[in-house]
Image (cartoon, rainbow, N blue to C red; front, side):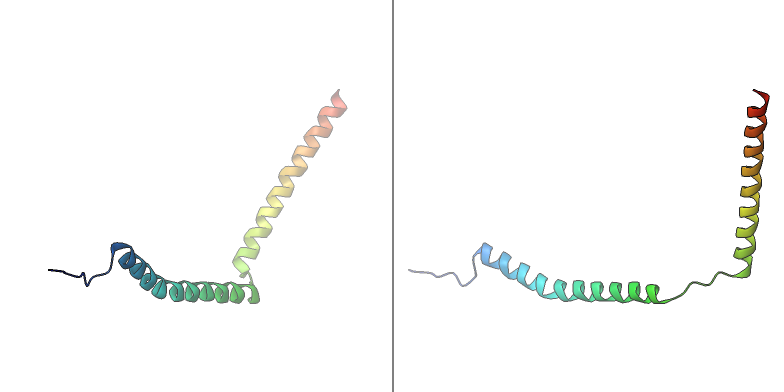
Length: 83
């Protein structure tokens, strides 16, 4: 009796599974990349306008920073004159 296997070898099955997986995954990956590029381009094309509250907070922070820097410079000048 001579019997023939009708199923493929394990390596052929593995290749078939990998091929089918790639058949579905490649278009999904390309779509994801395309959507990501469109989002990045949309972000580049939009202009960010700060609201008035953030402008006021930034001005206060800059004023406080310049005050602290000036105090530090005055203290350095004072120490140099005393020496």
